[in-house]
Length: 437
Image (cartoon, rainbow, N blue to C red; front, top):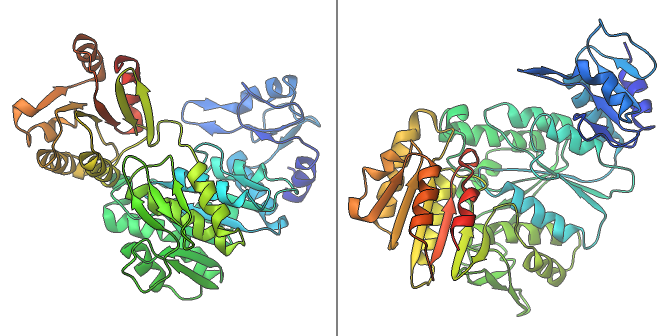
C-alpha cells in the first residue's frame, strides 16, 4: 500500500487527475472509482495505455506494478489527497453553497476576482463528493484564489465537502425548498447548508452575509467563532451598507454604483441581482475596485440553460431549464409575470426530489399560476398533474411527457411571444427550443 505522502509526491509528477478513461490527459493520475454499476479497477491498465502516468486502484487481485498504485479505498484516497493538497496551498478558499443560484454566483465571483487575481473556480457543476476533490487537485501553485461550489442532497454532504477543501471564507446564497426529500424538509435544508457556517465558525474563518436574506443572516448570528462577519444588503431600507442600487430588474438588471456609475447586466430578476451584489461585495473585500467589480458582473453572460434569453424567430425565450425547485420556480414565475410583453407563455416541467411534499408543492404552483396573467400555460410531467387540478381548464394545456409537448408545439407554432421554460434537470426541457421558432 502506498502512503498518502508518497502518493502526493507522485501526484506532483503528473499533469492532473482523471476519473474517466474516455478523456485522460497525457501524464495524468487516474483514480479507479467504483459505482453501483461499474468498477474502474478493470480499466486501470487501459488508462495507462491511453497516457495516464499512474492509476490509483484498490483491487488487490490486480497485477500491481510501478504504474498501478494500490490503496485501501480509491474514493477516500482521492478525497484525502485533495485535502492534503489544499493544506499545502496558502491561498483563500471561498466556499459557497445554497438552495438556488450557486453556479451563477460562483461564476460572478470568479468574474470579479479574476480582475485582480489568478483564480480557479469549480468547473461546470463538479460540486459533489467527487467533483470537489477533483476541483481542489486541479489548483496549481500559480493560483492565488480558489472558488469552490458545494452541492448537497442531504444533511452531512456539506460537512464532508468542507472537510476536503477547508474553506477560509464562505457564502450561502439562500435557503429554499430544494432537495426536500433528502434533507427531510425546509429545516433540514437550513441545517444541511448551515454545515458551511459550522465549519467557518469552528475554525475562526470569515463569512459573507446578505442581511436582507433573513434565514442566512439569522444562521450567522446563531454561531460564534467567526473571524469576521462581512455584512451587506440588497435592501436600501436597512441600516447596513448598500453596495449598489438596482434601478430595474426586467428584462435585465440595471444598477448604479455609489458614485452614479450606470450598468446594464445580462441577468434578470431580483434573485440574480442578489447574486451579483454578493460577488461585488466579495470583490470589494479582496481589494477589487468597486467600478471594476460592477463592470465584471455586468459583462457576465449566463449559459448552459441558466437564466438565458434566446431569440427564436419572432419569439424571445427565457431558458431557465437547468434545474427547478419550489423556491426557484416561484421566483422565475413571479419575475416573468411582471415582465412587460404583449404575449407570454410558460412551459413548466416537474420539480423532482421533493419526497412527500411533491403533490403539495405542485398544487401550490398551480395556485400561483392562477394569479398570473399568462396567455398560455403548458405543463409537462406526471407530477404537474397536481398543478393542473388547481387551474381553470381553459387556461392550461397538460402533457404527461415532453414528446406530446413537442408535437403540440410543432402543430401550433408560436409567434411574437415571450416564453419561459423551466423544469428540473431530469426533465431536459431545453429539448423544446427547436420547436419555439
